[in-house]
Length: 185
Image: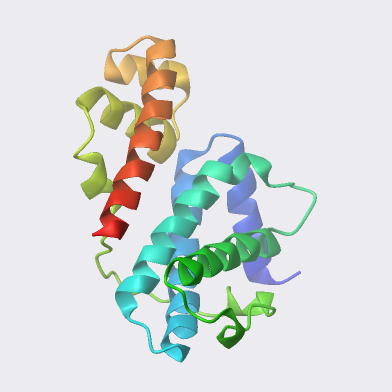
């Protein structure tokens, strides 16, 4: 197992145990690596950096939302690679690109590059969240971004625990709709 795998898996395991700082660090490190991966893949197809940024945001959001499906007995990078590949394939299908042009069988390539670029994405989660009602913003930020428990989020947001759960669920659904709407324009 590589040092990178050990470090990322450690962050994921701590994240799964509710450590918000580890979760933010994991998503930040994965974002940099995924950015390099997507830029390389899309550059080979003559595509732009903005598409790579969009894919990074989609992949990181999927990793965040689906983290409960990760099996701690398995290595983390193949799980991340699968999500990254599916997001790339989905994007290429939406844009009717040829899948034969993109070799996706090299899992080590996903974690090979660390791109520190801080380019703005058209799917910046914070910007999109500003379009949600205040209660949804607070609940999503507290639970999904800051890693607080439902009870802690309820205290922070001045909501009941069920109100936090509902706002998170509806807010994530609304964010997905906003992303889909922006992709069509």
